[in-house]
Length: 222
Image 1 (cartoon, helix red, strand yellow):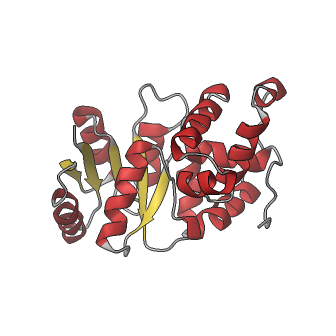
Image 2 (cartoon, helix red, strand yellow):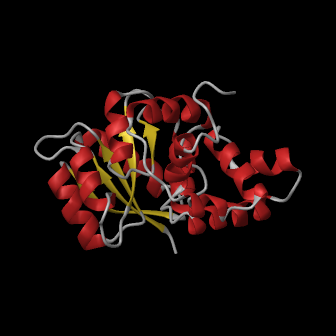
C-alpha cells in the first residue's frame, strides 16, 4: 500500500512542487491538498492519510492549531503530522511539537530528502534530520514545563532500552544506534517499539522529549 499524504500549504506553487516530487515515487500517493488549517483538518479527517505535511503560517486556522486538532492530546485516532518550515529553528516549531507534531521538514530540502522524510515519518523511524534533532529538542525541553511521568513506567525499561532511548535523544537513527551497539537494525526497531509501548508514547518525538525530562540526556550533552 502506498503512503497516503495530504499537503497543507497556502502557496499553490509549493503544493504543486511537493506533489510532483512525491508522486514520482511508486510508494507515495498525494490524496489531498489544503490551503489553510481548516481545510487541512477536514481533508485529514475525510481522507485518513498516513501523513499530513503541514505548513505553519497559513490564513485563518494556522498549522499549529490544525496539528493540535489532528494529533494533540486526547485526539482519537491521531494523524501523523510533519511540519513544513523555512528555518530549522523557527520558533513556531516548538509550539507545533507541543501540539503533537511527529517532526518537521525544511521547505528547501532536496527532493530526495523530502521523499526520505515522508517515508521515515510513515514508518516512525526517524523524526528529524540528525544534524538538527538534538539542538531542536534541547531548546524545546528548556522552554517546556516538565511533565510528571510515573517512575514505575520508566523502571519498566530494561537497561538496553534505556540506552536506546538515550541514543534516540541524541538524534541517532536506527541504523546509527545499531552500529554503536553492535546489533542488527531490526533489533533496534524492536527496542524502540518496546520503549514506546511501555511508556505509552505515540512516537519518537515524545520519546526524545521524555528522555530530556527524565534527565537521561542533558541539554548540551554530546
